[in-house]
Amino acid sequence: MCIAGGRIDSLTQASLGKIEDSRPGPLKQVGAHEHLFFEGDDRSGLYIVESGWVKLYRTLIDGQRQVVGFANAGSILGLESDDTYVNGCETITAVTVRAIPGGSLKDICQRDALLAEQLLRQVGRQLGAAQAQLAAVGAQSAEQKLASFLLSVADLCDATHGGDFDLPMRRGDMAEFLGLRLETVSRKMTEFQRRGWIEMTSLYHCRIARRHMLQELAEGGECNEAALKTIPQRARTTSSGLAA
Image (tube, rainbow, N blue to C red):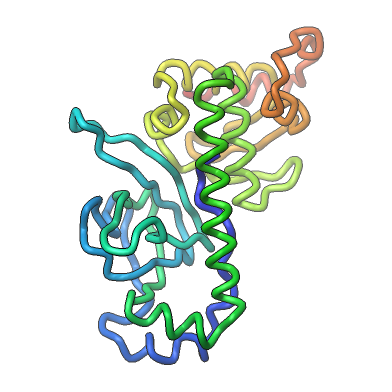
């Protein structure tokens, strides 16, 4: 899945020596549904997400937006180009970001080899994720795409088996990203709940109840109705009262 991943943990005070003197300061609080940058803007620097979620999008030739990725805490934004931002970046939730001015990046990487290594690794992760997304759009079924997506978000949130995680993106954004219709995403989310694979404790909070089923789907398996006959009563009750 083309979800910006890879945590940037080595941004030490020594690395930030020159950034701390810049204005505005390196830490920035941004409310939900606001932009960090727009597609085509001059690239002023990079952003490291400290908390919250953002979505990345591009404008198609007909003027519509296409969601191309999501990112949460630990992700770095703005690596795709040297001169301009090739994607727009809009916050999904309130976020805290750390700004790295473009002119400081070279000096910071020279002072902090570990940070430079992590930046390089994240470029590789994003390239691999983009390639996986291209393969998924043409090869995976709707169920497989959604299962892969939910597992990716859960892993980014460090949700182990049985763990809860935030799913803050709207169904429409999920549909755009997965190359599906909104109605299909909503129907499949309801279906996953009915089968007891996931539980939506609220509209934007999810729990993976049967991770192995989602993993089987994500790896190319098909829905096995024979394995779904016994669904925990609690799962059926929880999912039946929630809108997808």
